[in-house]
Length: 180
Image 1: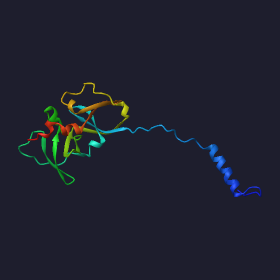
Image 2: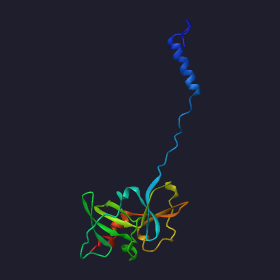
Image 3: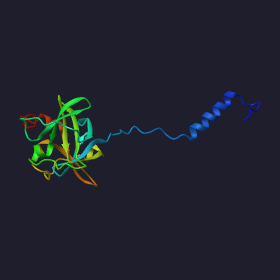
Image 4: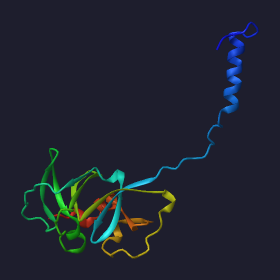
């Protein structure tokens, strides 16, 4: 583009500014963006559950462990996970008295909550699940009775109802802390 004698660089910039402003889209509105509620989906006691993302540190396959004599049956043993020695707890046996049916899908949820470092055995892990926070609803009462003290509402999607499993409630429960 060459300048004609009547156009100065300032005039050219002014014209470009006018053209840009005409073709520019408006700024986004001040609508508040709500973050999704994100959790880890898993199966425990045959139920689809979801734990808040911030309550689970890691998901692992079954680690090697050593048995510990004199503890409750649901304490499977001790496992060395990334240099930390932690109890490996069979959540199904703790909650309903029947051990997790170990298979390829069995996983361990590592938790570090309120001073409690532990590895929780679950039947299966489904991965991340996202929900809009306003989709959370009260517990409908369809969950097994033994899970109810640890549930904090539920979400529903095309794959069913997901009970919100509170790890914080679990580690505060008297039964959980009695391993001997």
